[in-house]
Length: 225
Image (cartoon, rainbow, N blue to C red; front, top):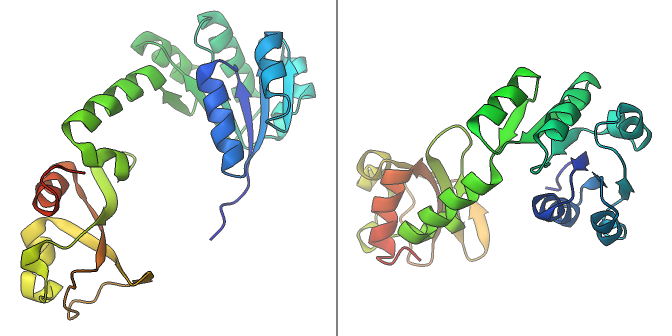
């Protein structure tokens, strides 16, 4: 199933803004990128739909570049607290459906929230946490974390004690504390059946809490790889 194409405004083309823009383009999204400096704008001019040099605290300049028409605006400014706050406030007032703002501190985040930012991101903090988690639990990088909790979704191999037994035989959810969302076999996906025996070549798409997933994955692969 193809993803719905959305339009994004990225304010600030530093490392975070450029990385974000490039990934969104890779995912088939429409991207407008703006920055106060000419260098990053020139760098991105042929990589995104629109790249413009402008004063990010100038409402009219933002409107002219198409800010009012985007689905999502992301303010990635990190160096100037003033510009971050002013730009976020302008974008919120323009009625953009989703305004996301980068924060460098808890106080910065509190201010951005008070002026109406719908979502706050801490790229440096988040990356630091992710790197630390990947050292301790290598499987993290291959699984998707579900927003709003400590639950993860991903594919595992059946462990030896599952082979030849059904989910009903194993009392799967009760025993492993995770849910099988999907079964994969011979390149095909199917809904999990409580009476179908597991095979060595199966792939199990499972959802569960981090601690329960870690216990199960350690059984399937002691190194967590």
